[in-house]
Length: 105
Picture: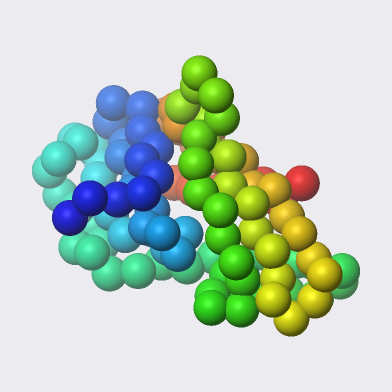
């Protein structure tokens, strides 16, 4: 199934769906050993001193920065006036101990 965002470095491939759920995680060989088999891993953010899972209460805009493979996602809370840009580099460092570590700016 196609995924909306694809992040990888040649030995690690992480695919996210339109809800920003991690759906595919291939390691150590891209295309072999999908460790999630399509099951979802979700993440959350701290906004205004409160933790919130990225779920149906958030409006999401997904894409890539121009002329790059860096994601350019924007999250807007439907319950408050919170807005968060979320950027993840497409090439994940091979020495990284975590597959996806989104930064909320």
